[in-house]
Amino acid sequence: MSLLSVRDLVVGFPSGARAVRSVSLDLEPGERLALVGESGCGKTTTMLAMMGLLPAGTVVSGQVLLDGEDILAGGEASMRPHRWTDIAMVFQGAMNALNPVRRVGAQIAEAVRIHGGGRREGRLRALEVLERVGLPEGVASRYPHELSGGQRQRAVIALALACEPKVLLADEPTTALDVIVQDQIVALLRELSDSLGLAVVLVTHDLALVPRICDRAAVMYAGSVVEHAACADLVRRPLHPYTRRLVEATPDLTARRPLTSIPGVPPRLDLPLTGCAFQPRCTSSLDRCAESPPPPRDLGGGRSCSCHLVEVDA
Image (cartoon, helix red, strand yellow):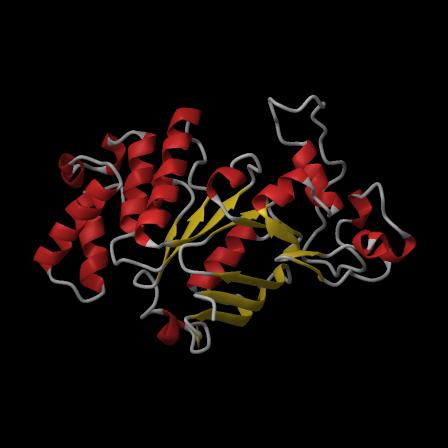
């Protein structure tokens, strides 16, 4: 049994948009999985659905199984005991994730107290996790605006670790950081996963980042997973036309090829989709691509791809 299993997750907003369309994922203890794709493909919405943090009125169906228990089945009542204690999240934009008028240590201690710890326990835990992510003790008494961007990102990771979760969802944790600090945050996440046995789901649109931290990657497009593979296989031999386009649009200092952009724009998710969602932008599509959506094809070795072209090649 997987530590975390997402089964047929669907998210619909009151506007009529279906932002997530039947997403299924599995995560083992200590494993690192990347969700990659363009902005607007459903990565962050998938994460927020797994945390039960989507706005009121959002319709969520499917299962999120944590150690075999469906934590979404009973709504907030079933989700709340697991949120932050078993599954926690590093939100995109550290400055927005932290309360600007409260000291960093107090915010971490509050998470501990909310989940049953005492005031002293919260203070000690705050100092412990801040040290764990490489921040000095004095950071606990400082406000978010007094920290650098890299320090704030480490503080947000410390906040997510406050209650010792088994699963960490990291939503673009390196956004808006310079390349040196990005490398430090990537190394920190990898080290935490290895030393604590922490399972990590990393959301990013930076394909070059993925092999440096993750074991497997799932490529999302228009709310669906279109390809799933080990990171090395995905980068070296992408199968889905969209994945190939992502690779071609990613700078690589070792590859002698020009960068090419992906033509067209993603589809509107508030309108019905017929056929393959990527077909209007695909230069290799078949006639049936516009008529019927390709089902996920299991290619063995933990690899799958939703593309009619893969079926023809096979």
